[in-house]
Image (cartoon, rainbow, N blue to C red):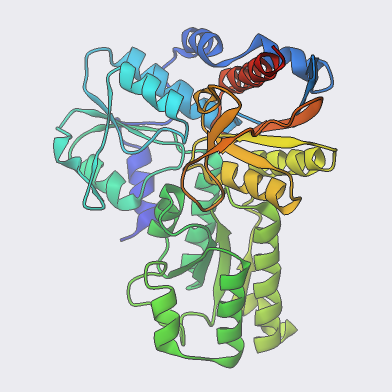
Amino acid sequence: MDTKAFKRSLNSSENYHRKGFGHQEEVAGVLKSEYQSHLIQEIRENNYTLKRGDVTIRLAESFGFCWGVERAVAMAYETRQHFPTEQIWITNEIIHNPSVNQRLRDMKVGFISIEKGEKDFSVVDTGDVVILPAFGASVQEMQLLNDKGCKIVDTTCPWVSKVWNTVEKHKKKAYTSIIHGKYNHEETVATSSFADKYLIVLNLAQAEYVSDYILNGGNRDEFMTKFSRACSDGFDPDTDLERIGIANQTTMLKSETELIGKLFERTMMRKYGPSELNEHFQSFNTICDATQERQDAMFQLVDEKLDVMVVIGGFNSSNTTHLQEIAIERKIPSYHIDSAERIGPGNRVEHKPLGGDLKVQENWLPAGPIVVGVTSGASTPDKVVEDTIERIFELKVAAMV
């Protein structure tokens, strides 16, 4: 389908809303009371440091709610206020944070369920209000909702939309979009739906495999098995990798996205020569500023002497996971939790190791004076960070009694 024409048509529809409903001031007050924190503001003003007893908290200088997330949550709240009696649905979690999503459920916002790997849109009736989350939604989902005559409230982050525009540029010149991301992540599913031909690479190792195939050929069946769930229908690595453009899931590790882009630029230069590079390779900067700032702040924080690192965010949050990777690379004992309730009772924490399942760690806080690094993903409210810090202080006080 002509995705650009469809989006243009959707944008002009009276059922499509992307700018809120004029309740910003009222909603801002509610969001402030529910999600902001006086303690976190105090820590910010004290050089991102707070000391109580034996515990020193060092907070990353950039963390938590980004502008795109805050905008999406505010629009969801506005939608409920503007449509007080209508049935409201959301096609996915509004953001990857359990407390925020639960709050929307409390406001009688329904979440589209997934049956056998597919979203069940049969529950949505004509005239229902449907919110598209911060990660966006696929073109096919938007078309289905438009055909149903739904009122669509689009909270897609502008940075995600920027990546979609990049993919449209690739398609216009018959480039295959190579997307750095997770093939089953909502954002990447949405981004790939705008592409004609695409290949999704998870990391630098997969990108190097593709690069080697471009330069030297290889086993086509092996290639297709490796990327069976991460490429467009009818993808042919022997012909569809002659002209490529780079895109990314906005929450991936910035440094890896850059390395992948440079790798493919060198690859196409070796294959076709400098004079033909522009005919075979395109790259635009689609790294999200907020993701970059949080990663840069994390690199700065782990340069300090930390005894423990706590990373707070939804367990399915890609940007939070990459913050966790940075701590692990520095060999700092690190714990990814999604809420303060994961801490205690006693000196224990229920956390999610990188790539693993939830586990309980006993005696996770060392005895004596400690420095605890704290950061949070872009979908985590300051109030959740405050609750976590207070719980850490409580544990250390209890241990001393």
